[in-house]
Length: 269
Image 1: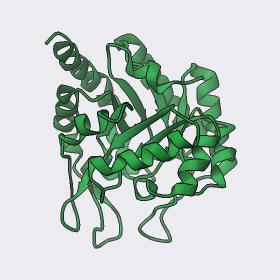
Image 2: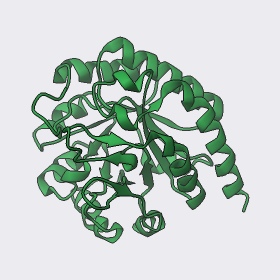
Image 3: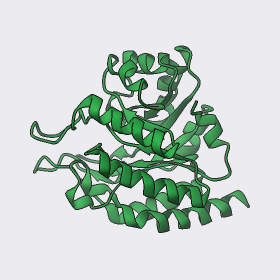
Image 4: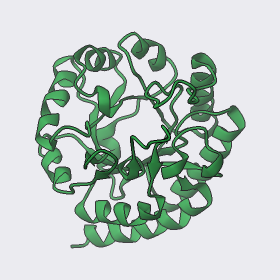
């Protein structure tokens, strides 16, 4: 069974990475194969990420998914094919048990991190739970979301920083939040690509700053974050969700190599 405690105890940071949403089987398997090979070579513990459905969209005509069971089945196939754990988002309490049949980690979206029924339902599946910090919350406030999962009988839980609302159309990362949340005794992950979103654009499509992925990631590793989260796609310009802030897949190996150098330097301080 996947354990956040085990992954965070390794010398290297762990990585949650994959496409924003499952667009099809071949795409998911191709991305997973590249990431699994790269992380294995670099000694990075890896979890494949893919949303089976996108519930939080700006417009009604935005792509939401290929079908719940089909997408969850693809995530299971990634796990079975490459021997890596998989993570997906859930959006309502009734989705927890369904998704838990296919994946190792249930992720709570940032906008829903205070939803008690959702947190408790995820906890009670026995799967690991990753709670994304709301863009509207302080790091200190996340201790209460964390405690809800623990009080429901599940200690296999992590917290994820994904930026703080800065005005109406931007986010910033406050790196003080990483050690602040680590004080609660749970691993802390930095969601690099979502921290670079530019939400609420006039066109109804979220913008982003992918040119800042490496600086944000470098800073997070230097601060001592336990894990990194990144969305990636072979061609972000054609991605069906969040392409504006994704890292092109072919750039992932070199970025991870450089981040490993920083982590090794931090470990030797």
